[in-house]
Length: 165
Image (cartoon, rainbow, N blue to C red):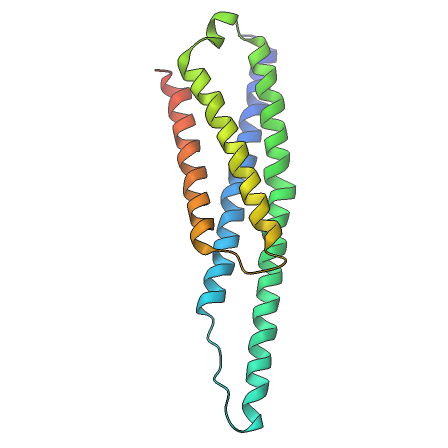
């Protein structure tokens, strides 16, 4: 393998780290927002008017926290995951173009490419969840499932590449 292949591989690995890291961080931000929304104590309404400011403080704090988690999840997708996806795909195509046609027929590589497509689908689902945060509190259960799926797919891809069964 030549120098061009090595630098293309470096770009590919950099893109993967950015992409997967962004997806995992964004899903944690979404899940944390949902967790806080479910566990943040709501002050009880009292008969006197002095309890009303507590409820207003709660609502203000929760709205500020939700807005911060929403911005964080969306920035992670825009600034880390999506540029990483673009770099990983572009350099991945570059790597494929440099491989002999015999290697393209290997089962492990075809499975890896299929899992990469699955990861792109997970990226799309996480992007949708981050955008939906502007309108409502997300589902913690879904965010954690997406988080686990991203981690699992990444680990399986890593095992395929390293072992090449």
